[in-house]
Length: 155
Image (cartoon, rainbow, N blue to C red):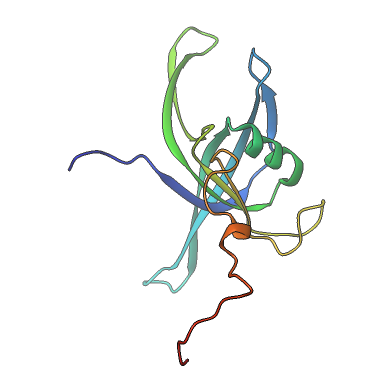
């Protein structure tokens, strides 16, 4: 294999309102806590069981940070694409600690709001916000069919 891929896809619910902070240079950073839950039925007892995993998500992309701050709240259902990153830090006792997070950087990462209820979230949900710079990607206005399209296809 010529390369490698570091990509994480999550669909889950926020466990708390987004925490908004700023870097020393003033750039906005948003921290999210996202829960994903697996559900199954125990074969022996027939009892329904579930297991919830909690994921730390950090948004460094200014546009996505703005959307997250404005539209997301505790319980919001989201689709997130990002990359795993592990960072090292020292706690109050000086011990080295490690944290692994899903990171949405400036030019990568996606955030999709899956529920469109309340607090000004655009109606209909499924609003995709990409980490790609504006102008990149597909533009619906440039791919619309021409009104004077004339072809001889019989169907």
